[in-house]
Image 1 (tube, rainbow, N blue to C red):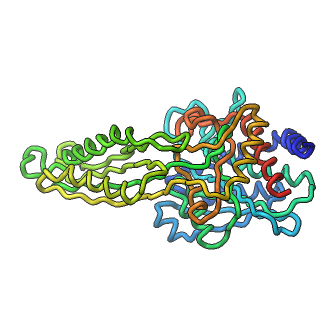
Image 2 (tube, rainbow, N blue to C red):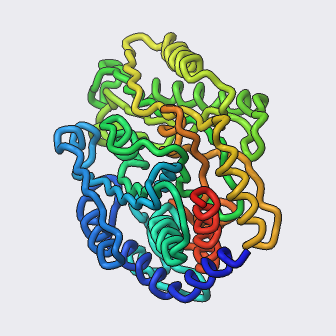
Image 3 (tube, rainbow, N blue to C red):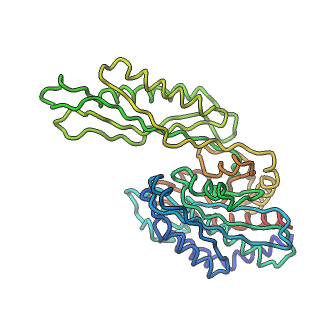
Length: 409
């Protein structure tokens, strides 16, 4: 179709500009924690304005941000109307917050360097790349000056790493956005229609602090915490027997990602805190999963006199489950991705969890598609030397632009 060729050609002609836009986004840190993300939103809004895309700034009140353990959040919304605006509203959502870079980088994590066809930087793959994908797909669509009907809305949000409740969740709750269909940041080589849920718990194990020279006067919280750890890790072999029916998702699993406690080497620790992450396949019931974990933890310390525990839920992110109305998105994205990438690209699930689930929980069909690798491992997302293949960025932008054209024509 001639319109598809025109879209592809516009993206090719403006690809250097698109890369510079992404580099500029990578160069403004959004490490979360600490989560001071408003400066990045301001920079993004300024860059979008230079391209003729005016962004509404929606600052989340400081009290809500601080209560979530973050410093600042300003979510951005760009609204584009075509024709009488009575057709579908297609939302495109990507998040700018990201985990800190950590160690081991061979490229500047905030440099946006391009080396051997790859663009490096923290959030280059997850998911500032899709700020770029979605903005330039929208510009390409408008370059056609074709008769369209409906709206495109860009949602650039800053709370995915902490669950999304102050990002898309906040925009939805306030009635600021309500698209008919949603595309969220993801991979170039699959159209994601389902993903895992996630339960995160903080477990505080309390004993009694004492001098290491007279340990009998103390109650060792670390020893009890070790029993909790052993009980938790013993669940993983059991989880491997539970299989998901969703392509791309295997089984549940549990990880303890953070441990802290004690006061000094010569002091019996009186308190140890564990933070655990339990990934739930779409078929699981989150309430049952949490109840089981709480029972496992309580049973682990039951034989330990003087030990008490506190278990606090940090996060409950439900699984993404396909809604019946997602077919137009899935069909268009799979068709164009297969054509542009020259290989079959199909709908599947992913073991990640994302804030796209918040749209589906409110009855809005959502799928995940954007610039990204075949696997999370390939991009080094959340690891040193995170990067994207720049050709994936070009082609994913073409896929999204073609899909928008189909949905709004």
